[in-house]
Length: 93
Image (cartoon, rainbow, N blue to C red; front, side, top):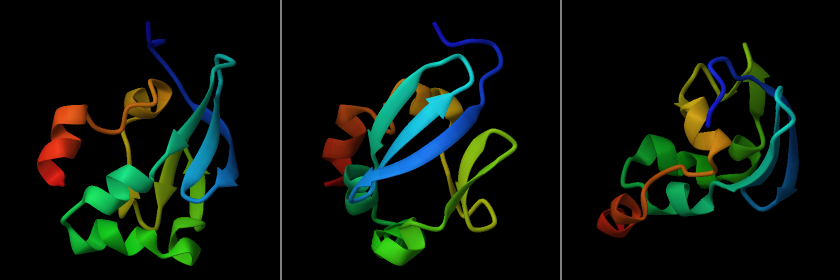
């Protein structure tokens, strides 16, 4: 069950396009963003396959964001470590 209020408190880069996210309820998730970025057809999202651009993430108001919210994800999806359904990823490929 996802808590009613939830914030990301820390982010550590642990691999290529992989971040370890710590949440304020003590949960830790290691999220691999590469499948989402690689399978996206949108050039603005695919631009984050540039390692320097990807590494420019930050925590703002408890959320993980890039740029001026150019790239962000629902906190519930990050908490569950599910950026997109398997079916959505298959369709994108």
